[in-house]
Length: 92
Image (cartoon, rainbow, N blue to C red):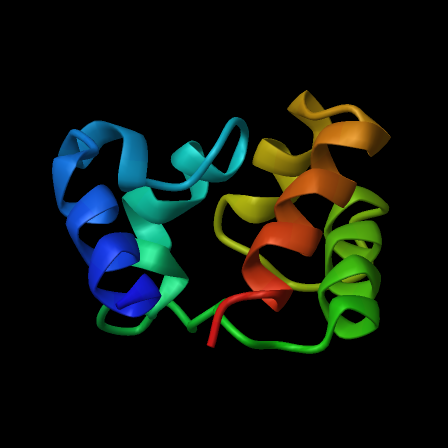
């Protein structure tokens, strides 16, 4: 009964509200819906939080090859990066 109520409640939420929160919204433009990956862009969903944080730090320091991530990540605060890492690592 509770499961049915939860499903109905989620269906009542507008589609825009079901998308990635905050800074993660920008990530899905390239990384696909819910960070599932898109073409040659790797998935973020379900990846280890420490691995994602390390990758973001490496992009920011220009220590990891990138076409655009090294520029994008510099536009985010540490708190925003942490929020995106938490969101994507929590997806299954």
